[in-house]
Length: 154
Image 1 (cartoon, rainbow, N blue to C red):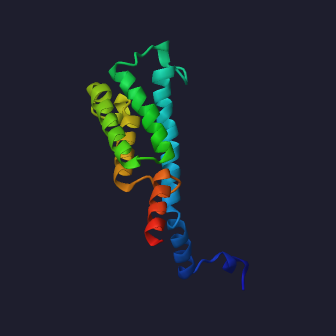
Image 2 (cartoon, helix red, strand yellow):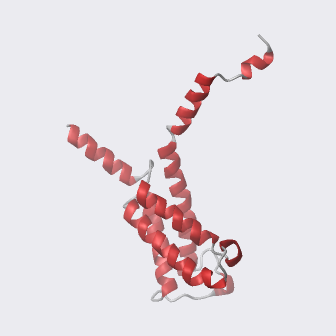
Image 3 (spheres, rainbow, N blue to C red):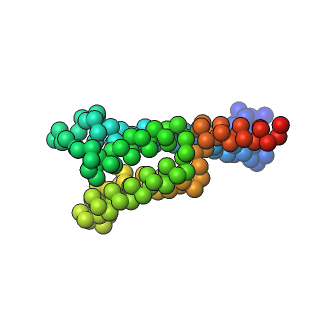
């Protein structure tokens, strides 16, 4: 047996590795949701509270379109972070990001890379995905589903 033979992975071993990796999909989907929600919330806290610091120290009235956006980003972000009511919340946030793109970015050009709309487009489709797929593991929604299943069995 050569030294290199220890590094050889058989087809069966590769399938086992792939299957094990794929079994983590719900947890990784949950981790993606958590990280995305934290990033999303920071856009809202910037609009509502100026943290992190807002460019040009703008003051956004709460009763305005940007105030509503900030409120959705903070509170919707918290719900997505927790994975609570993820499907309907994600659907609303996806719509918010579509509106943000077409109102604020699209008038400055078609291409998101040129008009600064990449985050809006990415969040729009990320939240749309979560509205269909659900929160994944690591969520309150998953805990509620597990409890319902357990109570049905009992």
